[in-house]
Picture 1: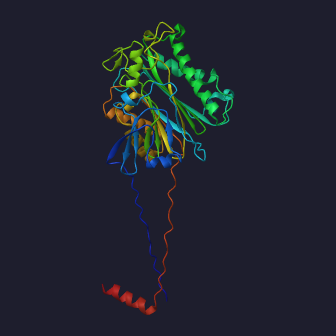
Picture 2 (picture 1 turned 90 degrees about the vertical axis):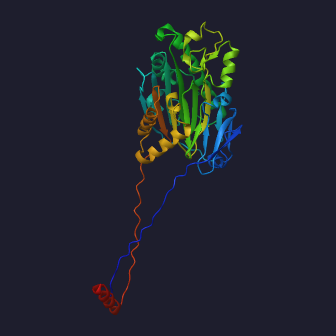
Length: 403
């Protein structure tokens, strides 16, 4: 007689998420993330932007920050400032999904507006010109009322796509993306002029910042006027992809003062907290005259890679309350639990509220890969058969019975 006994063997797996406990500040001319750069791109990253701070962690997590305190030295006034990541050997095409959330905060009204279009071809229909999938996102942070931000939101698709002289082919060549960038720059200028038109019904003391994001295939184009911000999560690392146009930026200050403007109490002419904006025509008239307040965007272009997880687009109410890396880490944790970008955007706004912001809050989270939770694989537990002789079996029974 043979007795069978099943031995159930299980294997324990421990997963540790590393976070940097110590960091070393390094100044550099390039957006170089040291050992992480190899994972980002085989040839590294190039940029025409001036110096920025790079925080290199001793562990696996590295963060690139362009903080407000550093912006006085790191921001750029060049409207040709373009950041391009080297082309990877195999082009990554993201699977897009997004979520957004906006809150009035402690203010009496919400002057923020935003746009989320995951499928631009479906939105434009027959007007869509390209073979590649594309998406469009924008945040508009109004001031002096909500009219300017609302006008830009309601007419953004018209200015950026319907009436724009966009390139007809989406070949991945330098000329195409130069033409696409030029079209975006022109759209910003035309929107600004439209706000000066009496037919827009926008008061000359009303204005808005604007940050737009166009994703075409694996190509990311970001245009920014003001202090909204776009931050990329690349392998858990926060990478800022837009410039903040604020009086604290030394180069912006120099541009303003060279045009006869002043910086008082960290405000343009003692009034505006930003040095670039759409509208605010009381500071730009007469039409055609040089003005310290401009609507010329900084435009950044980036090639997405498989290491790119998501993009956060937020108004300054978010970034005044938390650093780039704090926001990225928060969204990353939330995505693991909920697989829901809208919930992540809501949590970003909630965190800023918990930190006692005094501004309206708007956040968009754009994910670059499928968020379907992976089914946990149930391992087959090995069955181990022990064969006992009849004599051994009786001895075992005798021992067990005796106890």
